[in-house]
Length: 170
Ligand SMILES: *[C@@H]1O[C@H](CO)[C@@H](O)[C@H](O)[C@H]1NC(C)=O
Ligand SMILES: *[C@@H]1O[C@H](CO)[C@@H](O)[C@H](O)[C@H]1NC(C)=O
Ligand SMILES: *[C@@H]1O[C@H](CO)[C@@H](O)[C@H](O)[C@H]1NC(C)=O
Image (cartoon, rainbow, N blue to C red):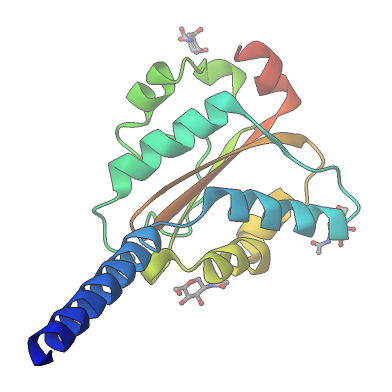
């Protein structure tokens, strides 16, 4: 009887450990849909149309998140705003653009916004976009119509695209 209770107890511990593990794994990177929804609520509060998920912007955001995943949050990339024609901050940018079939000459109005928040807590990531003036000004810009989000570990990358880059980049 005692050993049966011990067995049950052990089983319960196992279940708890695996639940804990799965939450830890899931909280590893941010929920990308949460970020898009949050940005669109912010746009709605400013009477701007919602951004539409843009495949190429999404591709680029994923590639960049993969690229910078191992950088510490103290890296200058955190909070930088990068336009696709500016390659100094992201040396691998040209190859990411090629991989995502984006013509750099057609995307001068795009913007890449990488944010690093320890544990990538969605709400903190979102306030980083909506509260920092350098990013909020892009979110509050009716020229942008498309959005892509990528995330890896502590990093979230939001890419905004204009109607122009939607047409020419396809
Ligand atoms: C983009 O523009 C630059 C300079 O104007 C030019 O050298 C380059 O060939 C163009 N690239 C493409 C893919 O059209
Ligand atoms: C962005 O996130 C970092 C890390 O959590 C935090 O220190 C910083 O204050 C945040 N900035 C804004 C504008 O929310
Ligand atoms: C958003 O942009 C409009 C028009 O440029 C400006 O009047 C408004 O103050 C901005 N709002 C915020 C919160 O930045």
